[in-house]
Amino acid sequence: MPLSKDRQHHSKAWKVFRLQIIARDNFTCQMCGVLLRGKGKTAAEVDHVIPEALRPDLFFEPDNCWALCRYCHATKAQHIERKHEGDPVAIATAKKAHRRVGLDGYRW
Ligand SMILES: [Zn+2]
Image (cartoon, rainbow, N blue to C red):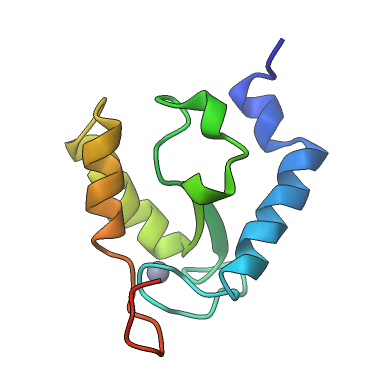
């Protein structure tokens, strides 16, 4: 029996997983590149690229998760999810188009 959305977000497993994603992404917002810290706009959020409502089975899939700052999560990511509501491919494509370019010139 899968946990409800709310219970999953408060689970110990999510807390551990969330930190793993933020560390993997070098404590950096994968959309704008800001260093993730504090509790304001630059607070770390882990976003499901394909929203959990569409693919609950990808909740703990690292490839479907990335670290964003609170600002990008609340603006760009949620705007995309509303614009392409119900279409996982369009949502993932639109989000990845915001992926920042790494120091080596390649997109991450
Ligand atoms: Zn950002």
